[in-house]
Structures are given as structure tokens and as C-alpha cells.
Image 1 (tube, rainbow, N blue to C red):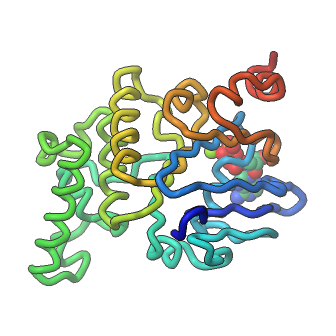
Image 2 (cartoon, rainbow, N blue to C red):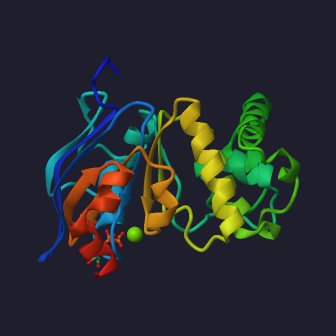
Length: 253
Ligand code: ADP
Ligand code: MG
């Protein structure tokens, strides 16, 4: 993006499900190379906001801009094609295929019959390219040693990293992660945080939806706090930690 222009702008977005306003007038932006966390209690509207950005859900009002261009209302594959990649809250994989195959399959994970090539209708050159890219991304995040293991044998932490490798295969400029640390052990959380720090150091922009406040504190450049579908505050981790309103909403104190 041009100097000073945010990579992503979320502008007064609103999402209504029937009579329920899940997200109301939420705005924030992400600068190129920035790691922004979206936090809030369960039901605050985090995943809905995430889905509005990725085009999985249509906006009831407001706008989303990428490098200054409106992408609100575009189908999710169009938004993905413009460099926005995501992971899912629940890992999607074929357990009895290798990690490498799972990453190479990318967004094409649907059925499980026949060879990868037949499933995707690829020629040999395309298949080779897909696998080379998967291998490159697994190496990038330090998972090369697990490449030929069955995905189903991975612990939860490495499964989440596998998801990240897959999301990286499309060469995104913005990576969105929905609760990547949920259910992970302390050591796995640290390994995940290291990978996210590395990606940021490489210039990636990231939006991390997270329930775990501690996890994002040492990681995020800025934090957007949501409560009851609205934006409670945006600030640095230190500002958020010092906010009585956030403490009240989040910790109930
Ligand atoms: P969070 O991710 O912060 O836990 P969500 O964005 O999932 O919160 O949900 C926000 C609110 O919107 C909740 O009250 C939830 O029940 C409601 N909601 C989410 N998705 C739908 C949907 N598809 N239909 C109806 N209500 C929904
Ligand atoms: Mg959620």
C-alpha cells in the first residue's frame, strides 16, 4: 500500500442476524506489517467480524477496504485472491494423509478419493509446483521434520502450525487467524507465538482473533477489544491492560 495507507480498513461494519445485532459499528485498521489482535468475551462478535472481513458473511452496513479498495460485498474467493488468507478455528485435515499432502491440498480439502492429482485435476507440473510450495512453507515455519508424518498423528500445536503453512501457500499479504492458541499447551503456545513473530518480522500483516488475553499481550502491536458486538477500545497492549473498562468487561472486575 501507499505510505500511510492502511492495508486493511474495517469501517463501521454491522452484522444483523434477524433481530440480533452481532456486530455494531465496528471500525479499526491494520497497517502493513502490523499484528493486530481482536479480543473479547465469548459472543462479543469476534468471529462474525472475522467473517465480514473474509467475505464469508455479507455486511449489513459499513465497508471493508483493502489497500484503499472496497472489498465489502465481494465473495470470499475474490477477497482471498487479493491476498487475504485465513485459518479456521477447527483444524480441517485428512488425518491419514501426510502433513505435506495436507498442506499441498490447501483450500481444496474436500473429498478423499483417488490421488491428489485426480482430485484437483492437475497435470504433473502443477502437482510438482503445489508440493514444492507446500514444502517451502513447512520449512519456513520449522516443520520440515514432520512433513512426512500422518497429519492425524500430530499433536494439536503442530496441527495449528500445519494450518498456518497451508494458509501461507497462497502467498498472502494479510493472514487472519481465528483462535489459533485455543486448547494448546503452554509450550505449544510459545512455539505458535514464535512463528507469528517470525512472520511479522518477514513483513506479514496479521489479524489474530483470540480469547486468550495473555497470549496476545506479548505479541500484538495493537489490540481491538470487543464487547456485546461493539468496539470497546483500540490500543497498545499496555493501554488495554491499563483500561478499567476492559478489565470490567473482560475480567468482570
Ligand atoms: P465470538 O466469536 O466473539 O465468540 P460471534 O461473532 O461468534 O462471537 O457471535 C456474536 C453473536 O452473534 C452471538 O450472540 C452469536 O450467538 C451470534 N451469531 C453468530 N453467528 C450467527 C448466525 N450465523 N446466526 C445467528 N446468530 C449468530
Ligand atoms: Mg469466535
